[in-house]
Image 1 (cartoon, protein in one colour):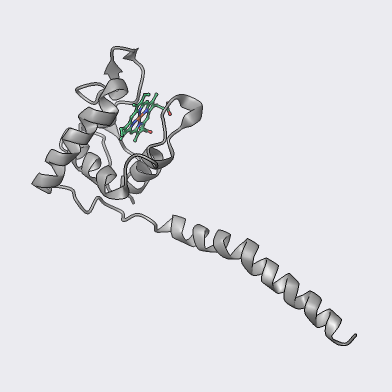
Image 2 (cartoon, rainbow, N blue to C red):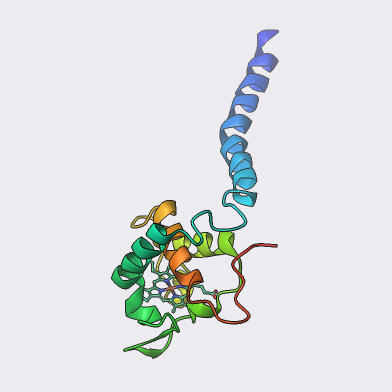
Length: 134
Ligand code: HEC
């Protein structure tokens, strides 16, 4: 009888840990999950590999100049003018914007490969592009 409230408390505490634990960790992880700037920026090998990956996975919609113009017309985003900073680049590429026809690449590309694509895109950037997060 005396144990009962304790048991209830213990169950509650365990449940809280199970439910809130991962969420709390994720919330923290999300804030600084990705570095402020691309660790592979300017790396020749990464740029080359990134170009290869870009022309494999992204070119169909973002076009061969990465200007968003493809056989579908002026349809996807102009990635030469990407301005949301590197962490957002990783996040958007991983998760996509499925409500706006940008597919998620999380199951296809790992973070390293996304960095390589980013390193390639940085070489194409136009005025107004921002790759380093504030
Ligand atoms: C099926 C077509 C398609 C493919 C393939 C595709 N995208 Fe996209 N992407 C889009 C569209 C459409 C948008 C614009 C979505 C919007 O309006 O928010 C977009 C937007 C983006 C954005 C956000 C740009 C911004 O300024 O907010 C990034 C980053 C991006 N794509 C990266 C990539 C990368 C990297 C690849 C290759 C791994 C890729 N996309 C492949 C269709 C595509």
